Length: 227
Ligand code: ADP
Ligand code: MG
Image (cartoon, rainbow, N blue to C red; front, side, top):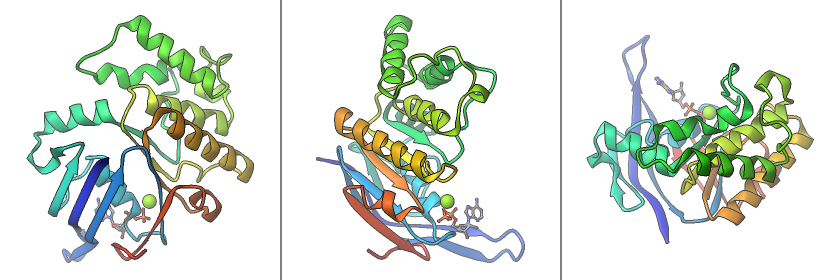
């Protein structure tokens, strides 16, 4: 089953210095199936993060169609998009973006605040505790991000991305700030969770070895998908 499809998407930015319009994505067509894992690779500046932001509905394409889970994204209001994002999409970034003043458990529960149809606090807490246990952090619930290692912080970010039981996880260089061993184990974790939950996973990565472990590898160059 297809989770999302982009067809003939383009996106350009206006160069703030020269006022020239610079194309960033050109005629991108892409389907992502429910439950699949996809890597996006390509040189710096080729448009990977821009593409991921479009997939996450954080940004809107200039032209082309984007259907997410049967819904036409261009026809959605800002409110509908915010609802779609919080219910169906989990985000992981290169830097964990955890709230320093919040505990691990509180950080994981933050995305639930935006949910419209919210399960009870007890159910959410239990879900958070189970997910944290599944990534080996059951003893860290009341710790603060500063007290964790880099790899542990990224695992918290992974759990936070999963807390609302999304259909899609978007990860922009999630292993970019980790050493090789932590990078490898974070990729294993993402793939284990993708298999056990059936979530679709799209990962931008500079590590060829991590990319090769995904079900499919897409290569971008100068705003185009070239393979
Ligand atoms: P990648 O993630 O592959 O390194 P990006 O998608 O971040 O590439 O950026 C692609 C190109 O788009 C770059 O040339 C970047 O400078 C430009 N770009 C990205 N976001 C903006 C923006 N908000 N305004 C202007 N230019 C942008
Ligand atoms: Mg990028």
